[in-house]
Amino acid sequence: MDLGITGKVALVFGAGSGLGQAIALSLGREGAHVWCAGRHGETLEATAQTIRAAGGKADVQTWDLADLSVIDANVGHIEASSGPVGILVNNTGGPPPTTAHGQSPDVWLSNFQSMVLSVIAITDRVLPGMRAAKWGRIVTSTSSGVVAPIPNLAMSNALRLSLVGWSKTLAREVGGDGITANIVLPGRIATSRIQFLDEQKAKRESRSVEAVASDSLASIPLGRYGDPAEYGDTVAFLTSARAAYITGSTIRVDGGMITSI
Image 1 (tube, rainbow, N blue to C red):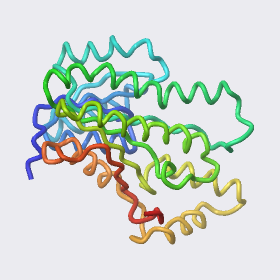
Image 2 (image 1 turned 120 degrees about the vertical axis):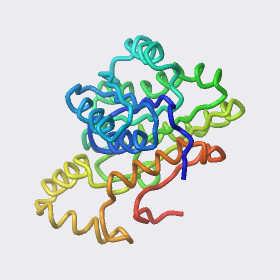
Image 3 (image 1 turned 180 degrees about the horizontal axis):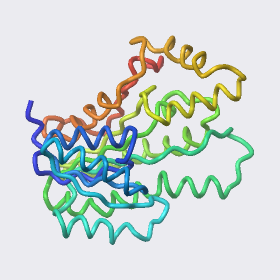
Image 4 (image 1 turned 180 degrees about the vertical axis):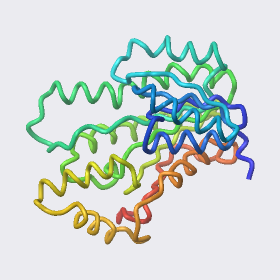
């Protein structure tokens, strides 16, 4: 299937590792010109080199999402180099495990700025180019915690859920311009983030990491953690011409783990 995104400029955050890297690689395979964005230049360059080695086109933009002052300059650099951003993948790092109570307002504020406000501001910056082209794809990666709150991840549950309401509202505002906006939420995808969370849970409960992982696997109907490539391919489809009638949606990539309808 031709996804119809060859030559489209794609800006992917967190592209140096984990889910962001998987998304960048999937978009690169489908012919998009991928801009790999994130804080660590070396890992971003490794992702870009993998895309190039497979015959794709990729560049790197170092970017700290906590710094809102760089948004205009960074997007301007991409536009000057490659043209308007047609595909935006909002993928931020997760906050540390926290309870819902007892957290400093400063911690809430700093994570809100890097996880929520940055996403909104970057999207606002690229929207004029999408509107002018009458085509655009905005995909925001969140967490299964927005559907079924995850214990000890209160800050992630709360902040990522705000992006679901924002994206749903945005979809109605920009649909007439040929722009879609969707949320994708991962279940237990085999990344270093999931490994870290399993380790933290094992430490809290004085159990082995293997026992924690075994419990997680038992809750997944498919009986395994997801492959990051499976998540990346789902996002790539949502950015495609073939997915033009999918907007305002929340797509689960969880192996059937989430029990709610």
